[in-house]
Amino acid sequence: MLHDPGDGSVLDVGRRSRSATAAIRRAVRERDGARCCFPGCDSRRTDLHHIVWWRHHGTTSVVNLIPLCKRHTLVHAKTYIIHRLAPGQYTFTNPATGQAITPLGTLPEAAGSITDTHHADIDADTIQQALGDRLDLHYAVWVALHNGWNPEIKRRPLQRQEVAQAA
Image (cartoon, rainbow, N blue to C red; front, top):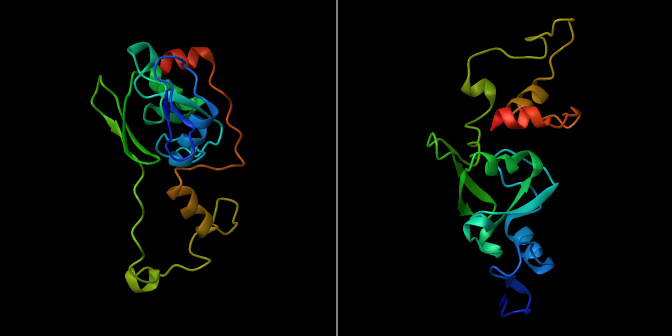
């Protein structure tokens, strides 16, 4: 076992155990945060998964574990290759297509006010919804920039048939 020289907590149990110790879980949470590390996902319900699979001789260590939610454990079914770029930032590469899913970038700072930057006259009456209600432009832009994620929408879990088709 590998112990942290500072507090003596277990950081690596090698091939002795597939499941992570409490110290390893705390260390991974400290490094990556308490959310799913799949790009664009903010789920707090995560489990630790081996980057190099256990059955492919991966170790149960801080450097080989990543927090993923149940929805993104499909990376195992599609055998994605996972690379850590920085704490909490990973790239997932599909080996069949070579397509990489990378972390979301940060938006650039505004160059000025919208009226100084663009010549369109945008006010509260510019856009109306189908029933005549005013569009909440702030909320619409927020939804667009957050990949359409809305906490009020309850998503149903995938059925086994859908998981098999996705693989």
